[in-house]
Image (cartoon, rainbow, N blue to C red; front, side, top):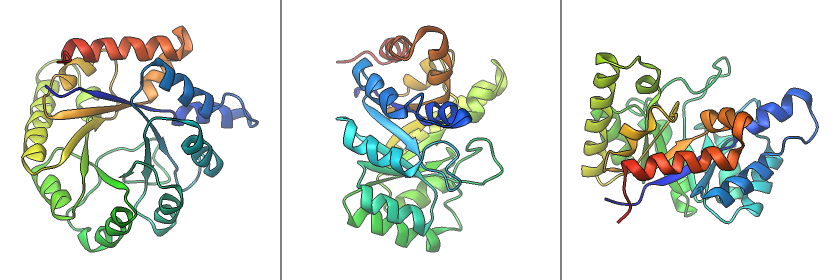
Length: 245
């Protein structure tokens, strides 16, 4: 099976910093620590309201890290302009509403093709890989492929939030089927949202998935044992589920 990459989202280091203002703790320092601990990429979401990551954070991140930057963004002209200036490795288009605490579901690609197509083409024209954060539904995956997306990131939130048992098993089967469909369509398959030590092994075992993006859990667990330690623990769980060739 293909090597499983770990992308570390450092948004909520900035959330803690912004609670008091100032510069501490630094999301840039956290990204460098994650890189040292074995992260394969760094993810950061520049939201419209700048509630955590700010414009200067994004610029500093791109300059500081030696691993790929995954720029999460809403499908707006403002964010496309930022991406075109930044030139990250990838831009992941996510749904965004000001009143939500976090991204609550996948992007509704179906029905938005006319709006999304020119944005995607601008990003791709600049050499930026385009990812769409979607629910594992066949219609959404086919629409993503038709729009020319390079990657889909499957939303794992409902799986992670479901109690162990039948409900979680049903969500797992939905994700597994979605991963198979996406790979068959020629899309690179990522997954993320809500993944933890408990929920990552089954998702990591899906052979079509090549990258997991994890943030909130890692930053929260780092309060107790440190960021390097929790990233190493997560990598170990991923490696057990997906032994490297």
